[in-house]
Length: 218
Image (cartoon, rainbow, N blue to C red; front, side, top):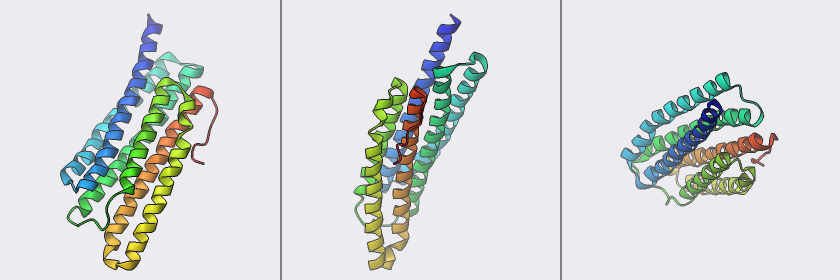
């Protein structure tokens, strides 16, 4: 019976990590949506919601510590638990970056956009997909699912460079755009970092299942 309870705890741990990931995905989506729609209220919801994500992270950490202390897991189970700690750390940082994007919304919401937001929403969609794939791989213990993250990460990097080039040109042509362009560059950089954290999650999954390290940030 005790072993069954332990198995249920491990399954519950995975479910909680997935739930936290869903919360983070929503925060990323709403942060970029708030920027695109010039929605201060939605941006503030993202910022305020970070506390709930932080609290949930602590709850999951406490569960991991309890499992480590009371069950003394070995081999694969040990890697499942320690990987959960690694993943929620990356997820928490992703949520912080979503909050940073929302803060940009509030800073520039009174200003008309200096250019249509096309590539930044594309970056957001890719980072969402990367997060979803890496978390599904964790739950399914399927490291082969994370190989595609390399290509996705390259796409995000390419879009970041494109945004950078376009905004630099705008700043050179019109110095009035510098302040907002700088803020939009921050947003693109935040999304690029979110993608890096998503690949970190994928690397953690790979190590969890195979006990080997794989670089998905090539």
